[in-house]
Amino acid sequence: MGRLMGLDYGSKTVGVALSDLLHVTASSFEVIRRPNEIDLKETIARIVQIAKEQQVVNDNVAAEDNSN
Image 1: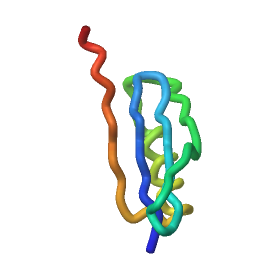
Image 2: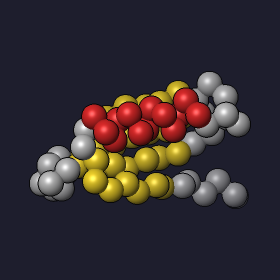
Image 3: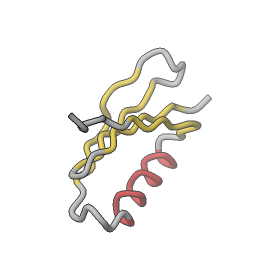
């Protein structure tokens, strides 16, 4: 059984959290700094690299609503 990945996607950073192998707990793994808001190539490449290295089997994306 692999890990679950959670992504907290923002305009300047992407927070990455990973679960333990039993999917009981999750904790912060890395904060990816986004040098360019428009160009996502580097950000996506790092997310894919983490997923492969950490044997991720699923992912979830959380979007914060700042429309106040």
